[in-house]
Length: 181
Image (cartoon, rainbow, N blue to C red; front, side, top):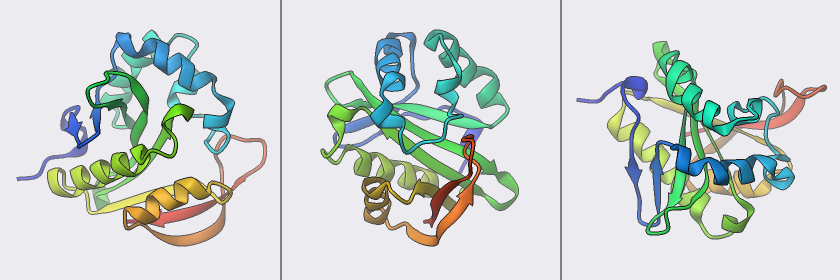
């Protein structure tokens, strides 16, 4: 029997990474991630973690009111055997009536080019389709973000729209590509 996505906070284990609930011990890594302009150059300004000055408070709200309202589920991406958070994996925009969810991710610069994003996305898709009642997975990327587009392609996402105006919290609409898996 499959479950609803927001029934619990999963721990998803792969070969090299573990997707898990964030803890207060992850605060220094989260602060480093949020300060990186290069990490966030292709991401919306309104992301959950960008709204907080205090990462301890962010973690509490993330697994409190945000999770309870089924707004977003953000998991830390930990390198197996290392214990360090190298990024975030996010499930958001739940449309329970049609069993649809959107996914996203962001990673520390030092983890780029190592296949971590590809494995993380593979784990997310596998979890959604085998452990939950999800039937549709979508993602969005800025058209300039070729690395993220490649991660989605490696995970069997298909670009369904190119150059669509998206309101990502910037002064002007962001031009993005839409993906479906």
